[in-house]
Image (cartoon, rainbow, N blue to C red; front, side):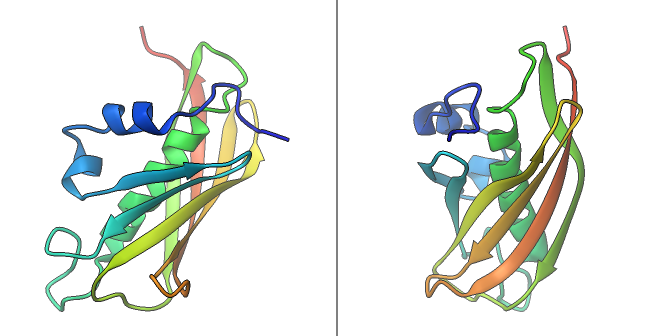
Length: 142
């Protein structure tokens, strides 16, 4: 059963992300399922820290991007918007090149909060980071 109240669309997500941190970091949206969104980010000069491994902040940016986009597609009230309230991340193993892939899945979709789990994996499918994102659901501005 699908969780979406607004059908997510890869092209619309990509268009909304133009000229933002999302496009600057090379994040791409890949797939939308009944209860998840996937994407990927390159591990390159834009996303690594000085020691040549994926920067933890880059991982968090990917996690919040997917979770936030997904959260706004399953709001119960059209007059609301979901915004980041809290995020944490545990960095499990380093990545030095290629791509990291992420999947965002809801743990809780409520009227005032949502909680999303975002798992990042390397190209070999090994867990590199796990993140939990809490979204606040509030009235849409304007």
